[in-house]
Image (cartoon, rainbow, N blue to C red; front, side, top):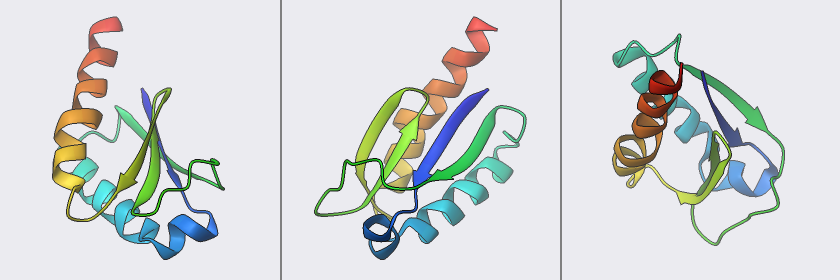
Length: 89
């Protein structure tokens, strides 16, 4: 299972963390990945960026995730991590 952790600290919250959480929930449900992804929140990860939200996928931290860039993030970061996890298990 891949852990996807969204920073919900005050800075990321103001930059759209609730929107990113909702986009992730919708994408997980749409792709029926509830058994493959554990979605959780965290307080400040210490990687504040000028734009966007910090999201950790597995052991990799990504900064600057926005609504506009979500599709690219989902397709090029999250889904490959799920595929790699499936291959390992």
